[in-house]
Length: 186
Image (cartoon, rainbow, N blue to C red):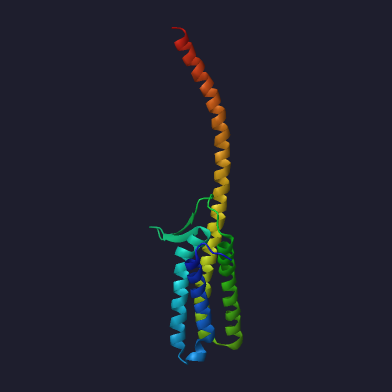
């Protein structure tokens, strides 16, 4: 597989994998829960920011953000690359499978924490799920918005194209025949 953006793909995977491995294996290397907690949360924060601002834009041509309005309400903003952009299949597959697969793993870890009554570890899993699901929601909505805008844009261009070609033909004939009459009479 050849990636168009190997550095973005590397960091996209490495921060997620780092957080998962720190969560799973951190207690093997240290008994300090706080250390494992802080490192995992930092990796999750790096992952969230990188996916939201860099990986999504480079790998699939999408980006989202949330703006707080003056009245206190939220406004989701979705950005997408031009519909003419061709995404690399390997980049796209890596992005979407990892984006949806990681929260599924964290959900399994949440179930495990509840079964084993390790509620302090459930805090880490809760943060991981919240950050991952925010990206899942944002990119899912962004993808829907991009497809809707693309379809609307195509329909508009098609309608305007046929309208303008018909109108320009009609207007053009009227204009040229009028000009012909004006200049022809002289």
